[in-house]
Image (cartoon, rainbow, N blue to C red; front, side, top):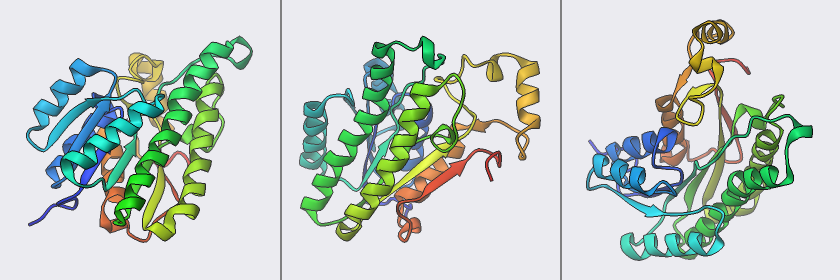
Length: 250
């Protein structure tokens, strides 16, 4: 039985570890050719090698327009097409707004927002030129739907990603390109590992009591949603925000 992404080529940013790596493993298992990108080259190479022949790794600083163009051109040259882009790369900053420096704010924006914009635009140009359509999945956050104290820089970029997603869906639908966003809640990943909700058993228990499904999310929970949006199973879905948070934001 063919996988849900059989014959498709997918590029995943932030693919060295966490959610991006889990998406890469799942995509490859579902028949896709997977190109993982990151700035963590050693981890990225190891992740691609562990996935197997269906995966490869390329260095990509998502803030760089020229690197985006080089990577997408290389993917199309090597594999003949690009069907799926997952904008997974991102960073957080736990800081009160009045204590956030301009340098800190701009760094979060450059990775979370500018990087997503550059990826969307570069991939969409390749998909439009090929005339085959495609699916772009932007990883936002529940913090891109509801403000979170002490995460002003992060939250503002995730709200912006939500807006970019909806605008792109309106503009690129005529080219057969679907654009959706995924909004994780508390997910256990390397990026969130230092949060008290994961390091303090008492805090974790309290947090889980406030989650209707009674547990923290795992990378696989996000990967399964991204797979749905990347595949033809979601062929009539575009411009939508899909929340994966155990029911906290119904």
